[in-house]
Image 1 (tube, helix red, strand yellow):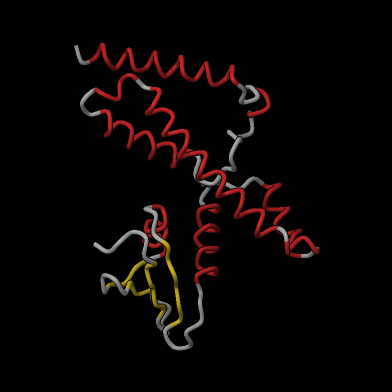
Image 2 (cartoon, helix red, strand yellow):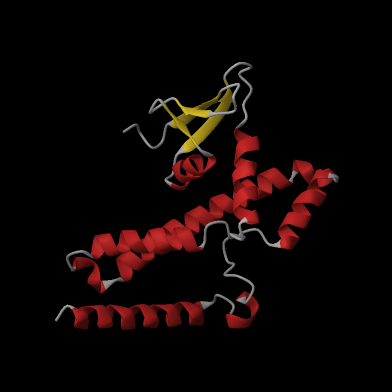
Length: 184
């Protein structure tokens, strides 16, 4: 398989069918969403004109997920995005969103790294597989949420301070203990 860091080129034919140039087969929007979830960068171009259609198709993927009830973007965020198209804020919004998502990705990586380094179970066989599953779970559960948010009830459940981190560590230690006892 090709390097995950290279950009996957998808060509759109006149029939609107999407063609994966890497595997020489046709793909759907859901396939493209899967490539992106797997960490691939994707570029979609019109075969005839050469126009880059990536933004259009990525927006279509987001719209389809939102319309199926897989809501990641709260109404107020969508409203603010619409407003940003009609105000002078359009020059700032893309940089702000890019920086926010970069910080979110960094914080996710650091959280997984901290769990590994603080964890006495890291020497147990199979722990790496469990860590990978945990990372995949975190990615799936926090897909599009900005760093520091945990949903609508974030204000009620705590402020994300040291007390919350200690509570999470205690819960993780309890779960690890239960897992250890299951293996005996």
